[in-house]
Image 1 (cartoon, rainbow, N blue to C red):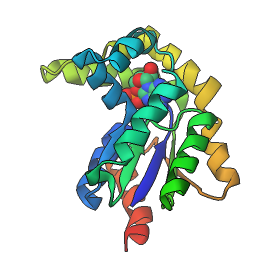
Image 2 (cartoon, rainbow, N blue to C red):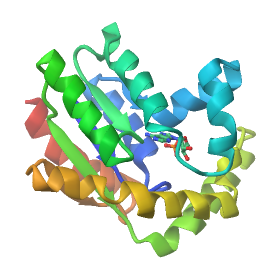
Image 3 (tube, rainbow, N blue to C red):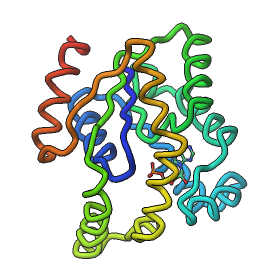
Length: 196
Ligand code: AMP
């Protein structure tokens, strides 16, 4: 299965992607996770990306397209993948189309988690509190002010990505305001058909 999960930061893409990994046995490819790993490892990409990520802005298309091009060529992504946090611009979506076409591959689904943005800052504050309570590290960019910048970047650059797929007849919308299990249920109902 090859799937894209779209939606603003804090919509639950990462949480749902993990459940889909378990159910469908394909890897979650999160550009955010890959970039954080690059920052932690101090690689050249990480060194370039760190300040931009800390500020809540988007890393350059060139960098993330390069990361994804490498990653979808790896062995475990051969049977499919769940893209989480990519594409975030139309240029990234076009580059992905070209990459997949080159390999003769097609997307099975593009799903947008549609959420009410007014509640997102509170969601992110809760996510940070839950991580703290579990003794887990809190993402630096889950600070409320940085989060507002991430949301602005989403509305400026990424909100156009869902219509890009909608025009191609590939987009399905799922109500992401529902409780986590209900969102998973809606996703499973859609994707079990694709996976059958
Ligand atoms: P995420 O974990 O998806 O919320 O991503 C965290 C941060 O990584 C974002 O705020 C961006 O700075 C950067 N990032 C992740 N994915 C992308 C992408 N596809 N394009 C540009 N920047 C990205």
